[in-house]
Length: 81
Image 1 (cartoon, rainbow, N blue to C red):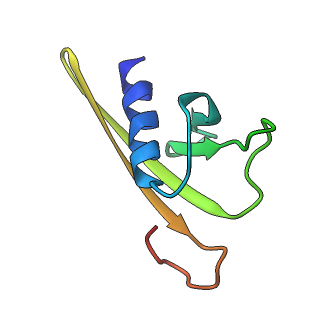
Image 2 (cartoon, rainbow, N blue to C red):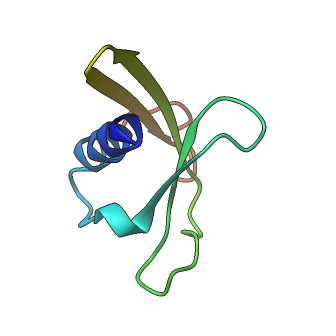
C-alpha cells in the first residue's frame, strides 16, 4: 500500500502542469510493467496519449517510487514532460 501511495505521489510530481489528485491516478500492471493511468474529471481515461512508467521499491519499512512520463501525442516523440 505504501508503494502505491509513493507511486501516485511520483506521478503527481512528474506532471507539474496538471492538477492531479490521488483519486485520479490508478497504478496498474496491465500484464506487464507498472503504468500510471490518469483519469479526467469525469472518471474517464485521458484521451491524449500520455505514457507514464512507474517503478516501486520496498526495503523494510520504507517504500519509494519513480515515474517517467513522456508525451507522444504532440508530434515530438520522446520529449520528456
